[in-house]
Image (cartoon, rainbow, N blue to C red; front, top):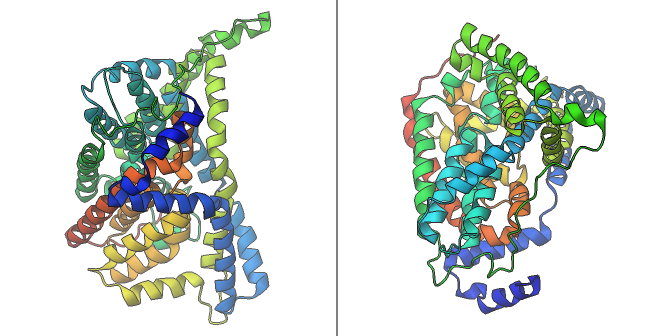
Length: 483
């Protein structure tokens, strides 16, 4: 069926016939597609707002400019680390062994609705390990399931299920930008370190309270995916939508020159993996495993070495890396601006010697108490996340004043990080920004998915905010520990 026929199919099922939540979501998404600018615009506007705020409290234009420049390059190590998270995840998920795993995994579901729930479960579960692996793996799984003639699976609902990992659970897992930054002294901006200290994974991701929220999100997300998946008579398959499911040809071209021999030989891959693997083994042998895995360099090296092994040949590995690099463009250009924003928040001071961070943290303290901090911060982080769709970059913006407020209110600092993590991911469910890599794999548009992810957003928001509020009293405040 041609692309033109897709328009005909869409015309036969106007959005007015869809359930209420789906109608609202489709209209919101249509508005976003027309009016929502690139994320870089929001970052630039945030820079402007912070600069004006610093001027408003009495900081001189020179002080604002100096703090901007001093902070601009302060996050280079963290920027590179976050770019490598995206690259290594894509490289692993696009490797031939994983492609074979996807083929086998696609044989499990017995019905279209169970296939959607199955994709949702694997997406949210794998995102706890690595968000980029989850996004690509789940997208490829949806394509493979859609090829099954015996399943009448709604392709849009399955695509939305593949996106749930980055919209529900990723920030509660090992690739959490905020938790990784706070566990690595070298990555924490110098202006933030005195406020938060170093917070290990044992005080963030591996708190039993955090694990409880992550477990609840896995279960609830899977159930909602099942309940919202259209039945066989209402489902729209990839064929109904006019989407071709051609097999991706990733075969290596034949060697043309003798000089290409090493590019096709696994010998160099094995040498690099042996050296890197030796270092990783030493890290885990000489340190507590929680400390070892919390190092972003260790985390990235493990996945980089695994990606090399799975691709086996340098030629194939480098092709996968080149395909992954475009995913990092937003990180590379926006993170320096996040560093500048954090510097202006903390370093540009007014006549009374007080920074914008001081004024914002004072505002938080005035409207929140120890008991309500989780709710206030959760709502605030979720709303801001719609406009600044970057977990790590947004944390650098928020952390100076929300963590200072946490100190003032004696809120457990590791829990404050997890409040951010649990709430920050929610806007991804209705924000098209992080959908782009998945949409490219599936051949869909954002409006095709948001009708289903909107229900996840509503239920996830109620679940997360309720659990944050109920669990907050079970934690005890500790003074920041500097390293």
